[in-house]
Amino acid sequence: MTRRVRLPGDRYRGPVTKDPAAPLWLSAVLLRIITLIFAIGVVVNHHDEYANTGLAYATVGGMAVWTLVTSVYYLRDTGKAVWFIFVDLLVCVIAMAMSRLVLTHEQLTVLAVPLVPTVWVTAVVAVGAVRAGLSGGTLFGLVVAVANYAVRGYVDTDLTRDMVLLVAIGGVLGLAATTSRQSAERLAKALRVEAATAERERLARTIHDSVLQVLARVRKRGREVGGEAAELAEEAGRQEVALRALVSAAPLESAEDGTADLRPRLQVLATDRFQVSVPPTAVTMPASAAGELAYLVREALENVDRHAGPGARAWVLLEDLGDEVVLSIRDDGVGIPAGRISAAENEGRLGIARSIRGRVSDLGGTITLETAPDSGTEWEIRVPARKATR
Image 1: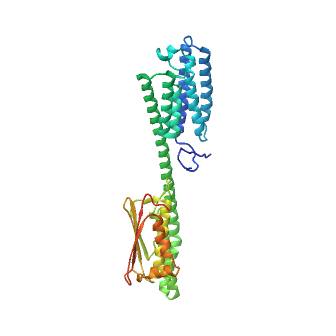
Image 2 (image 1 turned 180 degrees about the vertical axis):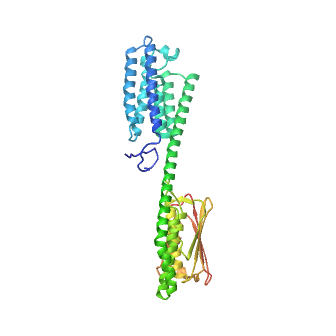
Image 3 (image 1 turned 45 degrees about the vertical axis):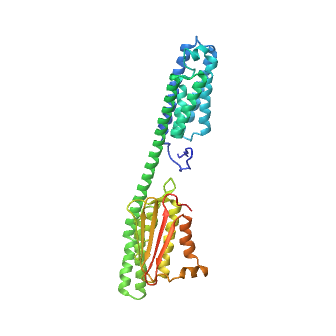
């Protein structure tokens, strides 16, 4: 059975089988049960001293009922609603406030008798930490500490020590919950990549044993026969190179933070005429920007195929400079005559203006062109690596 897990500020991350912070939820429930038992013992021990003993027992009775309700809710497999957790915090604050009616003034200010809930309220700090991480645990710890100050009516070293402990416990538990979820996400991603790589290798072996061998045979035999068969052989050779590049490229997977590796999107464009060189490590950038750059390079290579001449070759070089990504697309074709691009725009053919320059402008980058008749063409594109968005 799958379920949906969402954290504050997070987008939906898809179905998962289990919340990685489930053991922490169980710990929070056990903490509440244990502290409830302690609170009952404190009330029994001081019941003869209270100003309102009946209200004291009624308060711990309500705490017991709420402990049962929250235990059932927090241990279920479905998500934990934020509104319920804030209701939980409100119930704990109300239980603390009841102490002003149960305890005498001397017990509150001089004798420092424990409040009716005593340490029972620390469980809600753990709940806030598990649900919302470091910020949630810290916030809930501060709220409980402030309520403690308000009920007592004064500030001293002991109460301040309690505040430090509450905030520290909330922060540490919140950090542990966040770390466990992040570790689970990284593990899931690694398993997906491993599975995709294994599947790609399996497909590569299958394709190598069938399709690639057939294409290689067609290419070889066609060249031997000549004529129209030679043309088919050249086409088979191009498809063979493209297919090899496709099965050897990394999976086209986007990360959960919306970024993607640009390298595999360029590697699949390699043919016998077009060479693609990429760094050995991932070149991450927003997935939308990676898609736009891949489409841009495809357009540039198609222009080489159409206009640079039948024997023209092209080279694509990808560089990651940290704060920006640099793409160089160079060919050894006939080049672009002076004024040809402007003339094409005036004639309504806006391929370069829109497909190349327009995309680079939308991504917040810059583009330069170096070309001359019979000297080939070179585009250099620079795009911000982290903020590139369309």
